[in-house]
Image (cartoon, rainbow, N blue to C red):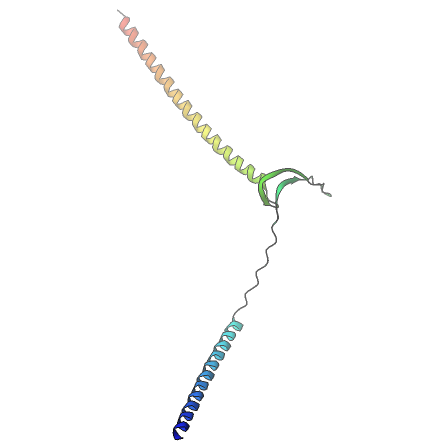
Length: 144
């Protein structure tokens, strides 16, 4: 009987120790959660991101005549190869690109013409000098 009593006391002591450990762990978790909540409360709150407006895409190009006090009805005058965002200025971008390409091509043609004229003048001078020397030598050799 003493042995049974001793085993029962050991089991009760172990059960009490386990309960104390569980209570300590729970208190530790509660303290961590309270500290985390305090940090979150002290931190500045992030602003909510504004929702983006829905994007509208269309493939047609519309034109309308606008006067000071009224807007005429729009009519479709063309289209784009792919759908583009509403309000995209296709004509302006195309015009700018066209102007840039035109300027580049004009510059290339000007340089080509300048080089061609320079080469032509050089060849003309060479031929003139050659003919002059030939005539001079011919006249010199044919004189008695």
